[in-house]
Length: 448
Image (cartoon, rainbow, N blue to C red; front, side, top):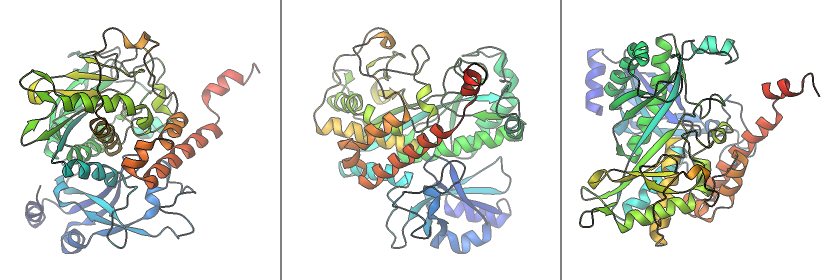
């Protein structure tokens, strides 16, 4: 929706509220609601402000110590929130509401480098210098439960009832129970500028997948975060709840965020060699970079403690670094042909922050191009059981240590972003280490 279209919607009375949002380090949208008239009179041109602590809190909004970008010593002042007018959209599930996504800026107008949109924009600028455009798509899976979010909270998230009685991958019957909700999601998100292609039942009980149309990387990341918020809000309006946790239960499949990516120039996918009818040299180099550098950039694919519980053999989540044509046991599955030829990165979970995950893929791929790497021959067989293949890091703290020591991460993202991201991960690991879990009580309460 353009600014002129928004003005027309406000004038007609169709829109009276504008949500001004910023993606936080966890990929959540945070911000303010403005009366539409005031937004058009002031905020659209001058922006607004948000406390700098929004980049340094945990998921419970506790301010955390040890960050350079914002801290108690500096008084946790404000960052400017500058609306990106290309992101205006209606939110049909919230009557009278529109949304705009912002960029964080310092008082002098410079971007806040640690903000997720800034991290991705830095990599897109590197592509732009080469005359390249990145197109991508993210496929998100989630679990749907019959309880509301409030009921799930009161139950301590135990004994939740999935929306199906058995596994429903590609099923049409049991997912039909959820069709009123899924139809509202498909239509509502499409009307909000997140064009939905399809929805389907996924492998586990109550698990669903919704795919949306590919687009340029920043637009796709914006769609991704709007999608997650929209699905949660629409589910809540139907008396249900959803979870995008990477692993909701040890016996169930994880929630993935498969990312498809290609580089384009002059309307052509540069990953395809039309004469040889196979992957181009650029494709092989880009994929070579992904294979070499993804383990040390895995923090941007798996940002939580829970992320690493998804990487289990036979679980539909990859555990080892390899690529193959249409093989779901490898970290990278190559699909399509012509302008549709692309690698699918199967490593990120649904908990990944899309801005950071896309940025990591671009940085790794560009390193592969610059270093003239090659992806080698496609893998054949079951990658889960091949001990010769390199593994991903096994925990959040291991991923943080690899990221901290990564030459590529520091060159591509900058020391400030690396230190910021590693500190967040280490604080999350510390919080988990201090927690007493249900597993510990069941294991030790009586028998130790």
